[in-house]
Length: 593
Image (cartoon, rainbow, N blue to C red; front, side):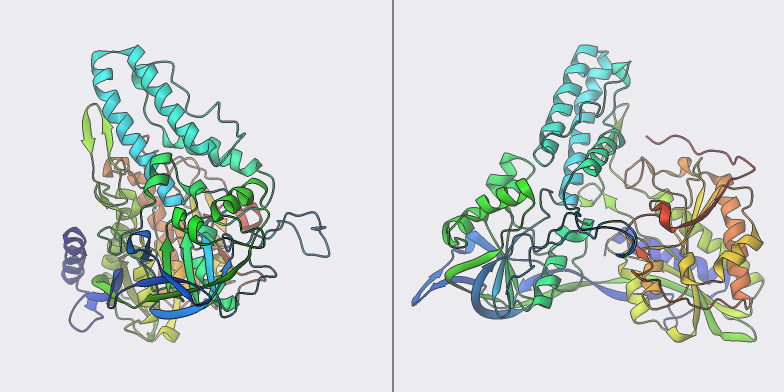
């Protein structure tokens, strides 16, 4: 746990103490939960190739245990399973209303027997690099561009800025076209009319990339399809006993990274690994895989099979004939204790019933620790991602609601939950939902406040209406406080309310959308739309006061296909309940950097 997070937790605890709220974890407002930040081997790690009576030990420099590995010692026949990926279902209506016979399909595990075998699997997704690695590279390109542009701007060197922009833009396009051959990127990040104002515009790069990706024919893969955890879950369900992962040469962003073929560190200072995956996993360097493992009757190299899969999106899973793999990965987790901050206002005649109001208080750190990338403006380097909107805005509103409810006691008990670890995968809310210091079956509803500080022309989004039929009538009665509001049916999986929805509880999610300063150093307090925050606060108060004073909010089982959605509110028109146009115009926050 970083000292900054500990300081923030102590501040929140002290503020609740000053407001007169009660702690939930004994006499402390801090409720620690463990975060796994890595593993250490408790026995020597080994990977061996067995051909008949001959056993070849693979050199330790050629493989490593995966940081998420489960412990185990296994031996089994080797089978190549491509990316172990499956395409998303084709969009459209029910099977009897939509002809999906021509819809592109893809499943690396279809018809493949992996029971009792060790699967050799490609990391990432077909034709796509690791998403986080890609965005980190863009952050690095942005930092390098800003550092090089600063002296050119200071000296008024227009020609130098043109050349720098052309060179950097060319590097980014070359990287993208490794994964998007033939994509039309000519309009990506144009040079402004005044070259002295040029900045590395992440939005101008991402927008055409997403547009071109949407045009791609063939199977489409969900964001999580490339994660090791997703692959191992599929393989374990199919009966595999172990996994050898390979990052194929086409998955790297450039030639230098491909040659290095580096392993992920076993312990992280800037994030969490989550729970171990279901099987023992080692990663083997791609050159070693090409040398040691030949696939199918044609004895093809794994690198050649990756190129073929990425070229036509046709699976090429097959046995690795005559080869068994034996691997040993006996590890123990490395964990740190991290605090949620929990406080409550006891209720009156309905005190046994509980309303949870939550907001995460963590963000993404500083350059060198966390996912933050530096920005430069007018020669000034900013390497701190403060997270004024994400999520000091929700945290501040939570404190104000706590003050209000302490002064005007509700009928139901209200729990105020400040979550840690949201940016690492909703870890704090998952921990609270799994091991609450109160009876979970007494929770009536959960309201989540995340990124509510940058109200702009698009207005406010309120998500989660699918979780109870009581929400929309309540929101209609409260009104829109003059704001434009999008009412979203689905439950977005990207914030803390999802942890409670998975426990069959009604949830609501208040959100004003992402922006160019999202997860960037420019997310400063001077960008907060304070008038808008006050207007949103009237709506949040109206909802929470009604529920805390006894409104029945019965849980509604999710519809066919589930109520969870990986996208943000408003991204899928089919799940939008309605939109209300505002009659007033709250002050718009300053433009993003």
